[in-house]
Length: 324
Ligand code: NAP
Ligand code: G4F
Image (cartoon, rainbow, N blue to C red):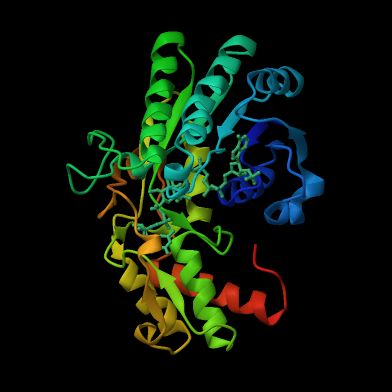
């Protein structure tokens, strides 16, 4: 039975990836950091099928000990401070986790067992103020936030350990991917949740920042399949994973409020609090390499994704469950 270690298993992607790997017959180990209250809501349904181990990307020895103890064949490094606005509030912390955390994991692999395959969660935020449309593996980076800059470091140190030590270290440059398990602070889930709240009469406004930003939004369940496919290749490489379509925040609003037969103009208030010091205006990826080499393609369209998220939030609220 192959064994995989997932860092960030309590996050959106970690939960979908754990489900996928369990279905593929993997023994799954999930690394979690110590918190004062348990935050396993995304993996509650599979908690008895995975092994949970305490560790932190800030703590080098915890990574070495976990690799020594569990001897995984594959490591999926999904852990990060992943919220872009928080990276301006905590730029050093973001660098420690999202950038240097990658080096800590790469070095732990090099020391314990250089045959372990690594997936590094790189991001389309690295393209930032884009110099080419659409963005592909060869597009130069121009990050626009401490988060984006940290991800550029993580991306290049992954390539460097591949070239320096021959590690099977692969970097997936994933464009935005969403789901009902997306954190409430990200714009898609903020919109789907508020559309549901407003429809059910439990809120009367939604405060947002820049409505003109454009993103290439896909479904997280599709994107974790690409991560797994990358580690099944004989050679490590870098891959863009995207839908190839771009939509604005306004288009997301139209679709989401359309699902509940409301007009978003009646509820949305623009609030300077949610504007960013430097914005990423347009992201759209070219996933043709992932299509050709991995046989990967997205299965969920933009309207289907929006509807899935709004419906899930309505169901959640109608059941009286707390949104997390
Ligand atoms: P997420 O929901 O924010 O999950 C992040 C995970 O990292 C959580 O499990 C979190 O644990 C964990 N974590 C944070 N700091 C840690 C530390 N110091 N040590 C150990 N674990 C730590 O993010 P996501 O959307 O699933 O994204 C997964 C990865 O892909 C991230 O690296 C993100 O930057 C990257 N990415 C995401 C997207 C996207 O659109 N979703 C696109 C490109 C790249 P807690 O639960 O304890 O907070
Ligand atoms: O949903 P967002 O916060 O995602 P963002 O910044 O694109 O980052 C996400 O995708 C990256 C991949 O490109 C990941 F690497 C990263 O970890 C994360 O998952 O914001 C999307 C857009 C931005 O342009 C933002 O300015 O929506 C705009 N926006 C407008 N109003 C808002 C809001 N974003 C948030 N979070 N909240 C608002 O009220």
